[in-house]
Length: 272
Length: 272
Image (cartoon, one colour):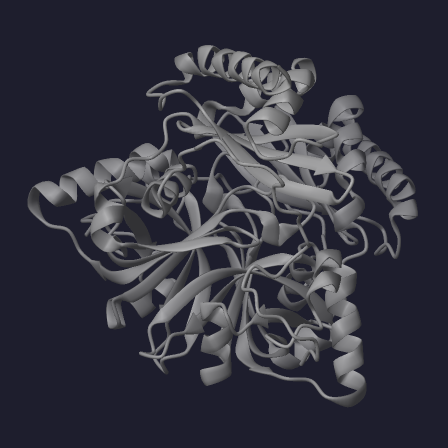
């Protein structure tokens, strides 16, 4: 047990706050981010209950029916027997690690209970599982396998240190996965490799870090760009928002060009 | 629910068996493999129990004290409160995915209960956690964080389709992580890139696939090489064992050269 005082749930490597106003930068809701993370993977860790009510963590593959995970597990496996005996279940999905600090990565936990779908929902669930896990085509119809749909009641998103939120089941069900996030990698690389000057201008003029010495784009979604900036005080995390949300990756280039122009004209207006 | 008969817990993409004798190829025990997988990561998914006894899956970072995972979690986080209220816990660690089929990857589940270490064990546990998770140095001593050691009672290893086993807690505690596995990547690449002919000879002469058309090395441990082979019937999985177990990656080259020579001389002896 530690002995230091620590009132902030955002425990983790220290970061520095902005020193100037940050232009309004809309962010995805927790429900939307959770849907995006769930849509970005086909493997999760399942927490189920053993006969003794002990927690049991195991790897599963899943597809998605809306936001509801669809599992296909054998009752010859412990987690399959667990679900059949007690339908309470939780899944954790983590964004593939891109940093050296494992707890800086985004992850989502969904929890509820599993049910065996019937009728049209069975067909849709079966198709959703195979679409996500093609190898399941070879065993999904075997008798010892059961298709389960997780009825999500609780959603918890953790985006790294100090970024975390819950979403209601209704908001989670109604949200859509972000169309930009899974495709943004090349665009982010291009921004960092060829437009570091523009990112720095955005950080200084729009994102509250007028004394930034460097700015690196670490994420892009339909609403804007995540930036990691450093100034003489240390490292900070901030964001810049596009003029309007994007519906497709095709709009990313124009949106970042507009951001760069806006940063330049804002800087010019401040100086004059 | 599926409708096909299926008596084999190794459900998954079909594979073909050897058609000839396989030379003795020792394999790591389930306990040893579990220790190796645990030592190969610093992040796991924790299954804990909520106040209602529901399972809750969440991402954690861990170090290892022997084979015992050492967690450091905040009671401001749900999983921290869960462990404080009910010490039953399970961790699942998966080998980073190298295949297109997520369920072909190796993973291990350990389960037991968490305890707060004291005295010398506390210091050792704290050091083990920081060694594995350097970022924890910034928060491990905060009051809201608790260091937990998982007392492992159950160990379950799944190596992919049809490869699975349990280990006793005693065997798990006594086993050592494989010294070759974490360093074998470049050697495996070299074998596949430059010695495909030798791998094919091993598959044909030593590994029970006399009609193999190709052989790819997919793993190397202290006892031998994992091979994926194909012949006219399909794809099969087999193994060749070194003359003696390795204690260090430095011995891998000589061990594979010996295997290649043995394959060649065995083939020659069969033909004469």
